[in-house]
Length: 254
Image 1 (tube, rainbow, N blue to C red):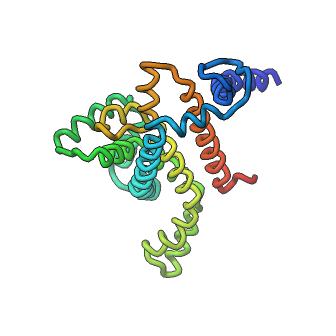
Image 2 (cartoon, rainbow, N blue to C red):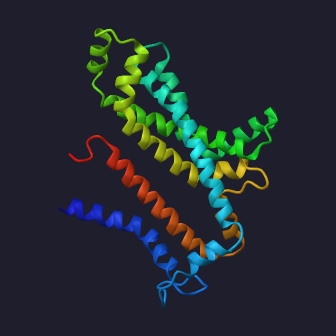
Image 3 (tube, rainbow, N blue to C red):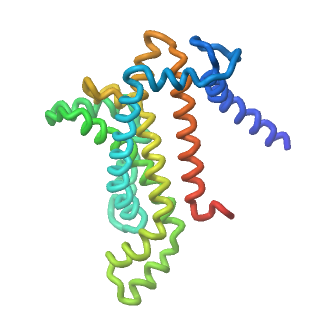
């Protein structure tokens, strides 16, 4: 019981800053005031009215959508090969593919910046999508690998014994069973890409300012209360994605 109490207290300590920001976002002041003296949606109206916020949010959405699609295309086959394949160097390959999780993002960002410059890649949107794809692929691999571990390999063997080819087994048996893990991995990749700051700061070009980068740049010169409204929207997005990902898990109801 004491352990549970400590866990709940620690969880509350972690969640409390986000709750404070949410409360501030519904205040009626033009300053960051806690507790707010009144309730209003003024900060959300300013978010919609002030120039740049919506366009940055739209850019972040497009980049996150494309990056999560790229991560799924690359991550799911990689997870399948690492889970079902038996070939020399499999563990080293897994370590390499998962390295973006372990390496500091500032190192990855600098490496990608130099790489794009050497390639002469000047398209700002493409640079962001490729960079975010590199950062989010490991999370898709981990999620898809966890999903593959829950699929009974005997189902695939039975299908092979009944005459189905390897591709048919993959298409008719494995991928349908893996769909919840794929969707969950895609959602996490979308969320991570949407929230990425460090890599975007390095690889983005002028005119391609994502929402987190704009928030970071804005807070350097002023502390606008509009940031509280944006933070509340991002928090709501994160909670919605986590709930959806949890409900997609096969054993969510057990």
